[in-house]
Amino acid sequence: MIAVYPGSFDPITLGHLDIIERGCKLFEKVVVAVARNPNKAPLFTVQRRLEQIQTCSQHLVNLELDTFDTLTVTYAQKRKAQVLLRGLRVLSDFEYELQMAHTNHSLSPQIETVFLATSNEYSFLSSSLVKEIAKFGGSVAHLVPKNVAIELEECFTKTPPLVSIPTPIVPTTPTD
Image (cartoon, rainbow, N blue to C red; front, top):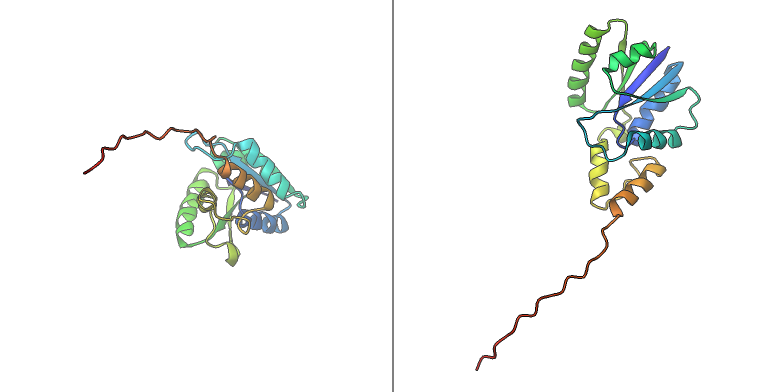
């Protein structure tokens, strides 16, 4: 059975990797499908995200990486997948994901959505949170694979060259 795990993965987190690894134990093949969304401004290019995922998932023999820019169910049909794999962190995820599962089922009844609850240690984790922590100089080494932590640090520690701006000299008048 083939499962598609769609998402933006900008960047991949240890929570994503946890779902991928567990999915690979459950399904014959898992396709991690990186969405190309022209309405979003991602930090990393699609190609870079694929490379990041490849680097941290080399140990998984039944994993395939791909990209898509269509409806998720259309992509899953093209890949002959029977399952959409989704991770759930908190109650608000469930509400959104259930709505998407019902919508996808209405579009393609032969494709089921399977939810995996994230492991406790990743229940708070999101790519947006990781980027915000990294942007403000915090360590994300415990939140993302090592290769991604290095790239995030490089991305956010790049500073523009210092330009010397002369300080204006303001004449003072002596007071008597």
